Length: 351
Ligand code: MRU
Image 1 (cartoon, rainbow, N blue to C red):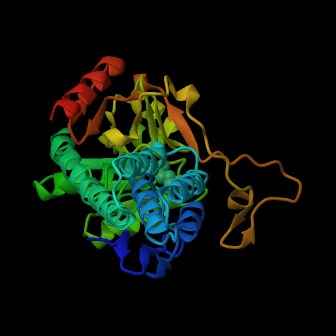
Image 2 (cartoon, rainbow, N blue to C red):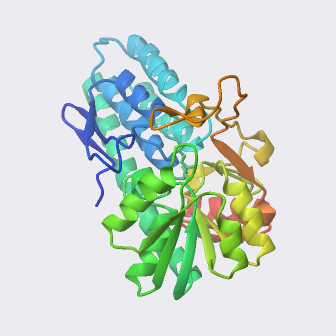
C-alpha cells in the first residue's frame, strides 16, 4: 500500500506529495509544530489524511511534553490543538480529529490518569484512527463498487485516493474495489488546476496499481460527456454540510453540473468524519483562499502578466441536488440528504 503517513518512534513520517510524481521522498516531522507545517505546506493533503496527521501531531506534542502537573499539560494540549487547527480551514476531518484527541485527553485527565499513561493512550488513539481510516476506505469501496459501471470510464477530480487518506482512498478506493471485483474501468483524471492533484497524484497512484488512467485538462470533461465517453463521476469531499451540500476541490461544482446536464451519475465518497452536522448548507462552509502564485506561476515560470488580478479559492461547494449518492463506510446516502444523513449517524451510533 502507498505509505502516505506513518507513526514512527521518533516522529511522523510523510510521503512528500509536493515532490510527486517525479520524486518519492519523505519528510520526518519530529514535533507537533513540524506536523502543522507539513499540513499547511500540503506535504500531506486530502481531508482524511490531514485529520489523522493532526491526531498524530497531538499525540506527538503531548508525548514530548515536559509538564509535571495536569494543569500545565492542559494548557499545552490547548496550544497544540489550536496550532494544528490553524493550518487549513475547509476539511472538517482536521477539526474532528483534534476534537477526538482532546476528548480522549480530557476523559483521561479528569479521571486522574498518570501523565505517562495519558501519553501512551493518546499515541494508541492516533494509531487507532489511522487503522479506522483504512478500514473506512475499504468499507466505502465495498458499498460503492456496485454503483460503478461493469465496463466503462469514470471521471474523478483532484485526488481522493490512498494519498489523501491513510491508504486505499475514498473515491479512488471505490474505483479500486470495483476493479478488484472484476469491473473494467478506465479512469479519466482531471488535472485539477492550479495544484495539479489529478495530474500529479491521482495519475501516479492509479498507474502504481495498474489502473488505466487518462489525464484531462479541466476544461475537457464537458466535451467528453457530450460524446458519451464518461459513464460515471466519483469524487471525494472535504466537508459535507447537514443538507448534503459538499465542499471539494475547486472545479468539482462545474463537473457536477455538467454530469447532471448529461444524465451521468455523480457520486461523492467520504467517511462520516467528513460530514459536519454543525454546518447547515454549503454556503456556510469556510473556503480556503490560497496564494496567488499557485495560479500565476507554473513550475517556477510566470504564466500571467504582472498586475493581473488573481482568484485562488481551493474548494467549491456542490449543492446536494447534483449528487446522485454519497458513499460512506456505513452505506449509501441518497436524497433527501438531511434525513438520510441523520439516519446514518443514528445507525453508526447504535453499532
Ligand atoms: O487541497 P487538497 O489537496 O487537500 O484537497 C483535497 C481534496 O479536495 C480531496 O478531494 C478531498 O480532500 C477528499 S480526499 C479523500
